[in-house]
Image (tube, rainbow, N blue to C red; front, side, top):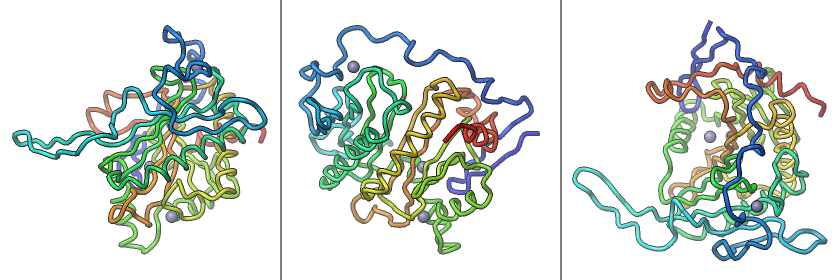
Length: 330
Ligand SMILES: [Zn+2]
Ligand SMILES: [Zn+2]
Ligand SMILES: [Zn+2]
């Protein structure tokens, strides 16, 4: 029997089906990302090719060695540009404004063939540090209301491991829906819905993939995608970029452990990862927001039905996904 499950935050319905069981093995094998053809020409993100990118914004040097370990540059083809005015105006009955913002690329490692799964957690910690320091800097610009950290693996235009930092002048719909759900729950119960979800998942255990001192990694109840995974800080925190040192080290461990499981158990699957953090600048900042990371594997998608109905269909119940990902030596 298929089941309709409602996400308690966004109230979005998801069809969870096991009529035709889609176990992890049904998604295998697919072509590992490193076997995909590389774009032609020299890689602009490789050491030695720095002149091929816009000037560097920020970098972290390798420890005890020469050269950079993490490097941040402006995106050559940005969704948002830093210069200019919003110029919000009507166009007939429609609204337009200039896409003012920032779009930066975080080159996560000097090595062209590197993945989160195989990186030491100390290296992942440096990537998190780069994210944090860039957001603390971007926060000074009053025009930006929302940050988004986004990673596609493998990268669409470049296979070199990298992620995107976006600073936007508006709060995007996905975040807006979450804020709406969080505030509605607060009004009714005077509690944070994410904090309540954490308690519930820790009690029920069946959707937990792994737990560290500061983070819970689990498959959400109304998972929209097979192996959808959330990483949520156990203590209520609204901003990712104000993460404490020990929490950041712990998060790097959680990320390393999770992606190693994906790599080993699901043959290095393609994925997308995003950080949802509170809008910045008053009055948009919400201390009620509970920041988190969402991960979806780009496998087994049913885009047509989703596009047509707004319903997601997931053929791998989150309980099965979590059980599968727990089965690995810690
Ligand atoms: Zn490269
Ligand atoms: Zn909370
Ligand atoms: Zn979210």
